[in-house]
Every structure is written in structure tokens, then in C-alpha cells.
Length: 597
Image 1 (cartoon, helix red, strand yellow):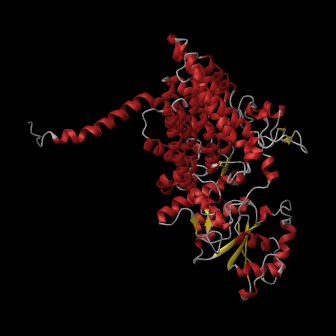
Image 2 (cartoon, one colour):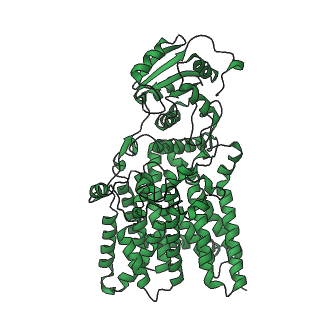
Image 3 (cartoon, helix red, strand yellow):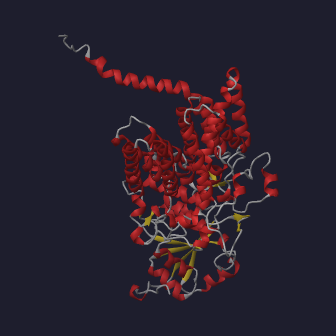
């Protein structure tokens, strides 16, 4: 019997690390150019942000974009300080502000939090937008590569998904909706768990727990959408397997168990708020207006650098922020060519992709058919499936039906990759030339025209508050304006002061409702008493926001003299557009504090 010597043991222990390094080397040799190309295109999608990534973010105004800079900044900062990233104790004064009243890609933020510590909130936010875009294209590429074995076809399909104008639009302020990388990963995992014959039952469950958790922790919106269409995907995929009935049932049960488990775990931060009443249902008319016009699927992006201006004149889209869902004419043609491949080895999968893409398009049409953002039959509509789907638990909290269209875009991109593979195979001597031509056509069709940007740095008022000693609270006004609220929340990343605030204007906590009600009545003596009951040291008013247009708030030139005339207020100072007021006299008896009528 051979004797195992000390000299032979290191080889056995180092064999596995060498194999891993060899696998990584093979992967990099294959994909290094794809990785670089996708990374550069993801940067181009955000241009000109990469020129000043520490001080500029995509956006037309200060709104949801600032909200998510604050969210990623606080969550990374909280982990550094050993606090819970899901609760900010400085906001929603005198209580805590729950982060999960809005959709948050929380696992991505937690996993990359050290980037936030090193880069600061603005650069960190921009890096996440770039990373999500890059990964979205690359995951589609990997799935197509595993199916078609064609790198050219996979690149083309990945490009169609990476460059979709839907993502450009949501870069303006919806970070979780940019995180579309988790969507193809979910459907890829679902497809594998259903179709792979050699997977054990436990592995099917584990795979679905993982991909569903990653999906739900990226976006609860996407989780609900993919659970609905994932059920259809599973039923269609299992349909040809019904001859092996019990094996089919076993696969279906394993997938269902894993999906439900992953969904529940991913939803825990949100489910914990159900009893608090913070998550509210959206009124039907508010959701109905977000029904997609069918033409939006073929209407090119209005900011396309070549023909966008012409498209905008031909058919302007006032709700472009949610209804830009151009699937790409080039991708559609290639998707059609996918069905010309008669001996394609995954023909039923190809059919499933088409049917799920079609179902997603129908759901994106919303509650009833709309043309030019108006219902075709306003009084006696023919209700579409989304009208009935909204009656289900949790679906009733969804507001924008058009977002289902991103699933249509995903499967069109996948089919486009298959069609591109079939096309390049017809020209075996010119595959690279054909592939380069197809990739160029996709890039031209979906060419990013750059994004508008706003500058985001700590304001003079934020820096002044940071210099003031003590742990105290302030109130920013005018109330109920997203720009004022989110900029103030962003400022707390630097000054660490307390203040009434909300994280989503449709899910405002009661404490902010109280503050806003009386802030809008200032300088009424009863309002001053209520604000003093909140223990606010300063009231900080943004002069530029008092323009008399929103919430019946007055113009600054008539409002400012009223504040100065109040015997209970005095002006502390001015910092750029902000005027700081404080209170005179003793604080009122809190047992006599006014309540909201």
C-alpha cells in the first residue's frame, strides 16, 4: 500500500485553488472585451455624469434622485456606525424614519457599503447606477451564451437590454428600477430549476431561494411582477413534461417552495411595516392613469441624439418618465428571425419567451386601453387583466402598470440574441463582420443621448447646521415639497441633525403630517405653538420655493413680512436661499399642544 508522505499533501490541498484560478483565467480570456465594452457603454449611458461623478447626478430637478442619494448614503453610513441601515433615528423626528416605505435595492447597498465610506454618497450613488446597468447587460449575455453557445449572439442580446431607454429614464431617480440585473437572473434560475434534469430537489429549492431573494432585495416592484409572470413561465415550461407527471410535479413543487421562501425573506423589511399603516394602497384612478399606450413599445426615445427631437414633435409623451418603453426595432426584427431557426435546440423555450413577453406587454397596458394617455372608453371600459390583478394582496400597492414593459423588453432582447445567432451562422466566413454590423445597428437604434444633470453638494445651510453644537431638531419649509424634504434629508448625512421628514410622499408618517399641517399655517399663533411642541430649535425656509404655485403656499415677498411681524419669531440669519427663524419666549405646555383636525 502506498504511503502518503508530507511531500504529496500540499499538491492535494492546492489543486482546488489552481483549478479556480484556471477557471477565472478562461473566463477572462473569453469575456474581457465584453466586460470592458459593456462597462464603457454603461458609462456612456450616464454621460456627462462620469465627468464629475462626485458632484453631479442625473436629473432635471431635485427629487427622487436626491432621495436615493440620501438612502444609499445613510445605509452605508449606518453600517459604518453600527446602526440599522433600515431605520434613520435622525429623521421623522421625534421618532425614526423607516427606509422600507419605498423600494430599495438593499442587499446591493449593504454588500457594497465600503464603497460608500470611501467614495461619499454622490459618487457611491453614481457607481451603483453604473454597476446595475453593466450587470443587466452582462447577465443577459451569460444566459444567452449558455443557450446559444454563440458569443456574438449573446453580445447582441446583452446590448439590447443594457441600452434600453427604459433604464436611461429611471437613472433620473429610480435606483431600484435600474437594478434590472436581478430580473434576467431570476428567470434564468427559474428556467434552470425547471428544465435541468439532473438537479436534485434540494438544489432546485436552493437555486430559487437565491435568485428570488436577489430579485426581491433589488426591487419589490420587480418581485411582484416576476412572481406573476414567473408563474406563467413555469406553467408553460412544464407543459411539455406532463407525460412524466410525478417528476413534473416534483420540479414544480420544489420551484414553488424555493420561490415563496426567497420572496418572503426578501420582503421582510417591508412586511414588518404592514402593521404600522405606513404602506398605503394607491387609489384606483391614480394607478389607472399609468396604463401604457401600445404605441409606446415602438415609439423611439425622445432624447435620441439623431431623431429624438423629431419624434418628440411628431408624438410628444408628457409622461415620458414612466412610459418610455421602446423595445428597439432592430431587436424586434432579430426576435422575429429567432423563429426562422428551424432546428434550434430550445424551440419550446423560445416559444415560452415569446408568450411571456406578450403577457407582460398586456399587463403593461394597465387596467384598460389608453391612447395618448387617455382611456379609450372612459365611462364604460373593457377591463384588461391588470384591472383584476390589482385586487390581489400586495399587487394593490403597485402604482405604475407600464413598468411591466421591462419584462417584454427583456424577452425581446433574449429572442434578439437567438435571432442574431441564427443570422451569423448563415455566414460562417463573415460571422464577426455580421456580428459587428448587428451590434452597431443596436447601438445606433438605442444610442444614449446623454442625461441632464444637477449638481449635488452640501449646501451652505447644511454646513452651517453642522457647525452648530448640540443634538437638536430643525424643520425645513415649505412642507410637502419633495425637493425641500429630500435635500434636507441629504444634508443630514453631513450635519447629523434631527428633523421631521418622509421617505415617500405617498407614505408619509403621522409625525410629518402633523408638522406639515401646522407649517403650512405659519405664522398663525396656533401653528407656532404646535411647532414648538415638536421641540424644533430652528425653522428653515427656502425662499425660492415660495412661489405661490403649490399647496396654496404664498409668495415670498408677501409671506416674509408676515413672519417678521410675528412677536413669537425672530430671524437668525440667511444662508444662500435659506432664511433661518427661531422662537421667542418660553415653550408652551405640551399637555396643551394642538392636534391636527
